[in-house]
Structures are given as structure tokens and as C-alpha cells.
Image (cartoon, rainbow, N blue to C red; front, side, top):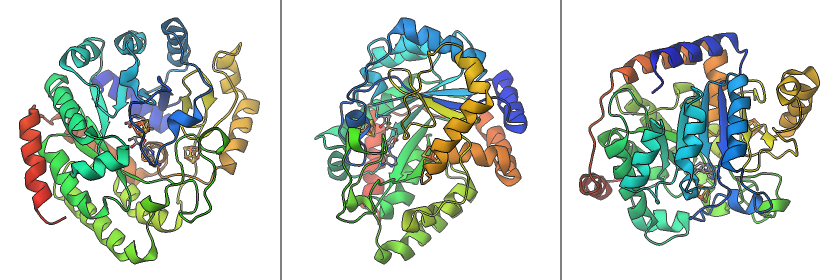
Length: 384
Ligand SMILES: C[S@@+](CC[C@H](N)C(=O)[O-])C[C@H]1O[C@@H](n2cnc3c(N)ncnc32)[C@H](O)[C@@H]1O
Ligand code: SF4
Ligand code: SF4
């Protein structure tokens, strides 16, 4: 969790809406997994990755833009051997960094180096307590066990007090029934659950748009077997009601109540109840330094073009980006709408302030791999 000074700055930025609050940088274009709902690697195959010298320049730009939080994502960030240096490029400029990872490559030595470079928080992807299902989603045998091992490594080395490390759970037809048990699991291990409705590029039917370079999206792809059909709708409503109840009863759920209330309509009908605030409140940087409205939408702008900072603040640039964003069908990737809600919805703002207070007093207990496996085993055998 951000220190007090960083927290005050975030609250001020949310109220004033004058600086970008949230930025994601895809540090790596590579990945060791091949998740069936994600085409991030294929769509970036023609890009290169920034060198550490270029990343230092990027850090200067983001520092001057006075961003609130930077999320390092990918591809898989842990594939970069120089990840500690990458993190340090930002933390030494006082930019708070969060890491988004599948955790499969986490070892004691590597995670210790990340923490020494200033990393305090991670978000790890885990979609199910069932190893066979996870391996199927990830297209990689043994991935579930590697994720749990990685989780235990981060659990051991990250600061124990006042941080909000989390588990990203992509909600799809594969795991709907086990969402409440997954939340019990993340709570038992002291991580906040963040539910992300699955995003599919097609309409869930046979009409498959191309993957990768030819697709209009960077991350989401068409995997019809992840999609819900009308037969699932009542279960969908009842699971999300359960999640709201669990959150009220103290389970560690990071999503706002508004986000949880609006998610079922997105999963059923792709209905959206918010307007995107990119590029003013948030944006993203691609592996080779392209400026993107978010991780899922392409442009050919470079963040290294001359006078970028002036450009970013100009009415022409904002209009150009807004024109791109307006054509986007919208999303419910948790991060982007949640920043908009935080800045524009007083109920969500109040909820976040109260949650921030709770988190500042939150003390996590480190858990070993064996303890995590036992917790998963117990929950797996109870009714999903
Ligand atoms: C693209 S990954 C990059 C970071 C890292 N490799 C990981 O998996 O955490 C970032 C997040 O996007 C999620 N994601 C991937 N494809 C998605 C989709 N089609 N819909 C919603 N979320 C998706 C992943 O589960 C992960 O939590
Ligand atoms: S979701 Fe993450 S781990 Fe899975 S393929 Fe995409 S980038 Fe890799
Ligand atoms: S609405 Fe579109 S442009 Fe905005 S964050 Fe979501 S996917 Fe990106």
C-alpha cells in the first residue's frame, strides 16, 4: 500500500482529476503461458521491448506527468531478467509500482530482488482451485501448482502490513460456480480478490475474428467456450449477489460494490454503465513505448516523440485519443472503470476511503506453499 504521502496525493488527484492517476506499462511482450482468452503475445509479436536506458527515459516522462500509480504488466514481466532495475527506475523517482504477474517464475532470490528494488504490491492471476481447469485455461501442464508456489514466494517476501496484494480472477463459464470458494481462498491467504469479467472479441458465436495482429484488440480474443449463455444468467446473478454479501461480511474483495453490481450485465449482454476517461485519468504504454488508451487498444503514437509532455496536455492530442476511445465498445477490465468510478462517483469514493482505512490496519500472515495447498484442497472438496 502506498505510504501516507502517496495516499494523500492519490486522493488529491482523484478529486482534482488533473493528473493521470493510473498507468499500465507492458514491460514484456513475451509470456511463458498461453492462456486461451488472451492474445497479448500474438498481437505484440512485431514489437520490441524497451531497454533499461529507454525505460529510465520513460520513467522521467511519467515522473514529469506526475502519475499516481504504475502497474507493470505484460506479457509476463518476470521473464525480464532486469525486472529489479526496471522497478527501481520508477521507485527511485517516487512512482509507486505494482506488479501484475502469473507468478509461475517467482523464486525466493528473484522476489527478494524485486522487493529490494521497492516493490510492495503484486496482483497474481489465478482463476480456479482446480489444477486441471487452470492448466487448461493456461494451456500449460503444471501451471496451477507453479502459480501456488509463486504465490507463497510473494506471500513470504512482500511487506506484511498495510499492503493490498491481490488475486485477479477472470470470471467465465469455467469458474463461475467456484467464485465464492475462490474468495474464501484468497481471504484465507491474505490477498484481496479482484474479479474481472472475461472479455471476448467475438460475440461468443462461431464467427471468429482473427487473433493477434489482425484483431482490433490487443488482449481479448474470441474463445466461445468462456462465454455465458442465457442458461447461466440466473446463476450469474446469484453468484454476484453472494459476492456482494461476502464482501459486506468481511471477505477480502477489492472490487467496488458498483463494479460488482454492473458486472453481470456485461457478462450477459456486454452492457456498460460508464464512460472511459482515457487518456486523461489513465493510459497504457506498450513494450516498445507506444502510447495506448489502455492495454487493449492499439495506436501508433510513441511516448518518445519530441515534446511528448506538451503534446499529451494539448487539446488536439486529447481529441485524437478520445476519437479512438469513442469507437471502443467499452470494457469492464476492473482497473479502468474503477478509476473512473473513484473520481466521478461519490459512493465509490467513500467506499474506497473506508477500504483504504481498513487496509492501512490490515496485517497479513505469510503462508507456505503447503499451507496454501491445504487451504485449496479443503475448499475444493466443499460444494462449488
Ligand atoms: C494480460 S495479463 C498480463 C500479466 C500477467 N501475464 C498475468 O497473467 O497476470 C493481465 C491480466 O489480464 C487478464 N486477462 C487476460 N485475458 C483476459 C480477457 N480476455 N478478459 C479479461 N481479463 C483477461 C489476465 O488474467 C491477467 O489477470
Ligand atoms: S493472461 Fe498473462 S499469463 Fe496468460 S497468456 Fe496473457 S499475458 Fe500470459
Ligand atoms: S473503454 Fe475501451 S479504451 Fe477505455 S479502458 Fe476500456 S477497453 Fe480501453
